[in-house]
Amino acid sequence: MRVLVTGASGFSGRHMLRHLSSLPGERPEVFGVFRSSPLRPETGMTPVRADLVDREQAARLVREVAPDCVVHLAGLNRGSLRELLEVNVVGTEHLLDAIRDEAPRARTLVIGSSAEYGYAGKGAVPETAPFRPVSPYGISKAAEDLLAHRYHAVHDLPVAVAVPFNLIGPGLPESFVGARIVKQALEVAGGKRTALELAGLDSRRDFVDVRDAAAAYWQLLTADGYEERIAGKRFNIGSGVDCSIAGVLDLVQRLVGARLEVRLPEKAFPELVPTQTADISRIRASVGWEPRRTLDVSIGDMLVHAGNG
Image 1 (cartoon, helix red, strand yellow):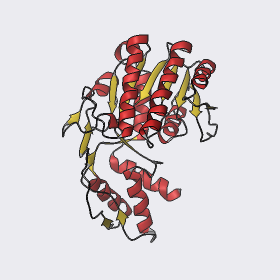
Image 2 (spheres, rainbow, N blue to C red):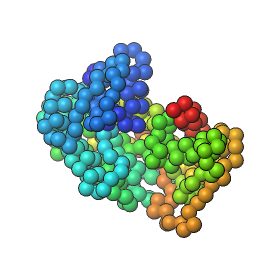
Image 3 (cartoon, rainbow, N blue to C red):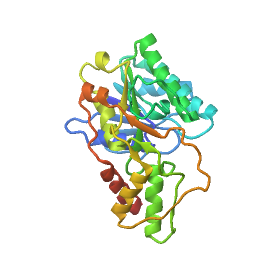
């Protein structure tokens, strides 16, 4: 089996490659796509440079790799709306066009984001919730999601969408609050700063370990009856529970064994998405996936990783 992983040099992409390399038995032949950050060759993985915004590069990539499965993780999470739409939507369009023309039976999983949903109320968010994105990133991911469903409906491509909620785990970029708390906590413990500086403590999020998410992606792609049971559908990936930023801070304090002072801004800005929790009943019923790692395990691994970095 030949597996194409786009965005392979990113946070999720690196963990996806590790998951594929750790599979028991005969492992798939993996091609990791990167645009600018080079990849180091790993067992069973061939690095390939390609920019999906370039239609010809996308077509050549799929033609030469001839994948059986595609995990589409490439994209931007920061930038102007124009930049985000170009990379996340136009790049996805070019990839799906290439799959349609060169590998139309390749099982394809487009990775969305819970930012598509925005604020959907206090209850668990099902896949049927309307899109109400509040950020340019969320707008671009909602458009990418809808585009994937169009290619299934119009071109009969075996494509599905996975929607991870707040990813966490070793190597999480510091632009995400979980990594920010871990980094600043270690700096306080090391005497490099006196307090953590955070925007707020009350918002609640569903945190899911990136390693569990990678396992979910693979379970979806390799499910029996994929074309009938998985393709054309959207699957939430989360823990099914929420935790406040204050709760994350409490876990970090317990794991580092110190009480940490927090400085908050004098003027509080309204939280556009005060809470967000995934309804994971669909993926649970479809492939039996459940998250394996609790939040304290994920944060503990993040502390070890950051401390060794």
